[in-house]
Image 1 (cartoon, rainbow, N blue to C red):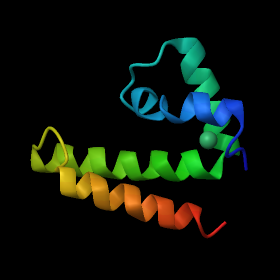
Image 2 (image 1 turned 90 degrees about the vertical axis):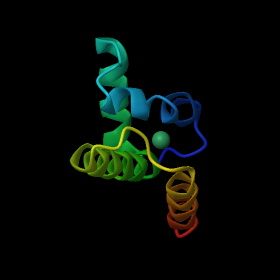
Image 3 (image 1 turned 60 degrees about the vertical axis):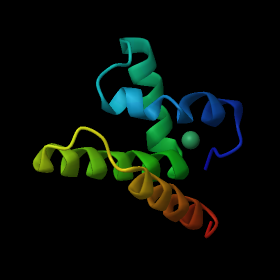
Image 4 (image 1 turned 180 degrees about the vertical axis):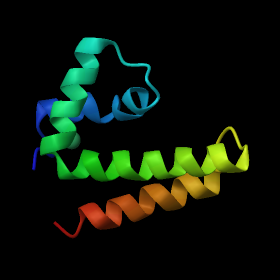
Length: 82
Ligand SMILES: [Zn+2]
């Protein structure tokens, strides 16, 4: 678990860019390494991947604000169970 480390704080906001294929090679390596070690970010990555996959299937380009809020709240609940 790497939550509240400088690495976690720096890479957590980059996970979505990595999943979208927008990270440069160096960042991609760092994010992959971090996801392998950080439970919180790996859960976020799984959720983001599921949401993006669902959006592709439905043809929606962006999740609703309600879905985003619910997903973030659920993720926070999961992190509180550590
Ligand atoms: Zn992390």
